[in-house]
Length: 284
Ligand SMILES: [Ca+2]
Image 1 (cartoon, rainbow, N blue to C red):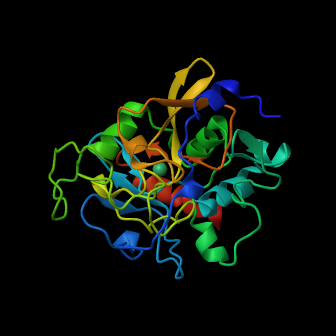
Image 2: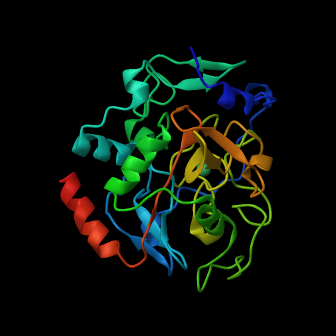
């Protein structure tokens, strides 16, 4: 069964999310991502009326552009259709969940991360794509014209405000302790919030650089390698807010796949038009 002892050892001493009470509270309504201010560029008009979100938006930072949200099921489906990709979780009987040890969940894949298909397919399509190995995430980014970020790149995007004229409450050039700003408020973690598991793209509060879910929701694969391991960043809905901070040093086996791990990509600056034309041609 799970053959990831190095990974398992890194997931010890979890808080038990199920033991925590969860209460709906403040939360901004889903934001129309394409209607955002200076520095953001919409690359593909695939807005969904039910979720009011466009999950293929890139934010131009000082040295690169980055996906505004975690890569969604909808986007990964476009890639899988175009390339014929069948993931390891699909081939090997389902992805992993941690319940007193790693347990394989039959049928849990990026198509249906938590098992049976949900009642709201449109909302489901905006959820983060998970149960993907590092190589599968990297293949998506290459297909989309980008790559996985290094931890340094990811952290600069997550913690340092780079918008020339950020909205009120944000300060250009300031480095924040949390991807959500001065506090972890607004992220999807194991603390009380409206989401028992992963939240759909654009449902949480935007953070530094207008990015969503850099802290919490799902871990994000980075390019950094340590032997057979690859770094993951930002924590997840399963953990408390502490895992969202920059000093967290988390690694997983590159060929591992689990319900808590997703990704987003970075791209060269100034190539939005070319990417847009390419992706639009691929999804027709
Ligand atoms: Ca995340």
